[in-house]
Image 1 (spheres, rainbow, N blue to C red):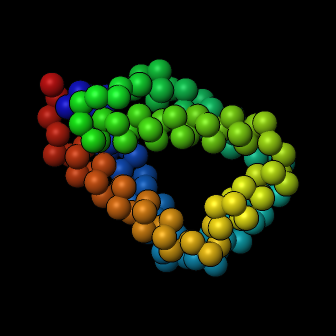
Image 2 (cartoon, rainbow, N blue to C red):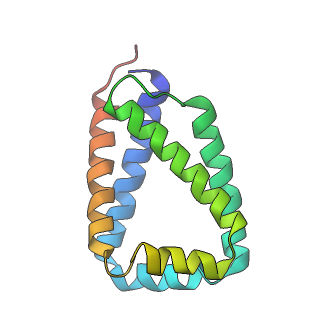
Length: 134
C-alpha cells in the first residue's frame, strides 16, 4: 500500500468512524444541524470552499484506480468530496436542501447513512492501520 493511501485511509477511516458515532448518539441534534445548515447560504459557501480545497488536494495526490479496494475507495471519496464542494458552491440553499432532504431522504434513511459511514470508516481504518508502505 502506498504511503498516501495508508495515510488517507487512516484519515478518512477515523473521520467516518467519529462522525458515524456522533450521528448514532445524537440523531436529533444532527438532523436539526443539517436542516439549519442547508438553509444558510454563508455556511454553504464556506463548506463548499473547504470541500473543494480538500477534495482537490485528495484528487491531486491520490487519483489512483488500481491497487486494491482501499485505494479505490479513497479515490472515490476524494472525488465525492470535490463534487460535493462544487455543488455546494453552484447550487443555492433550496437546491441543496432539496437534494439532501428530499432526493437522498436523509431524515428517513438516517440510520442507514450512519451505519454506512461506520462500515466504510471501519474498513478504511483497518486497511490503513494494517497496511505497510510499498
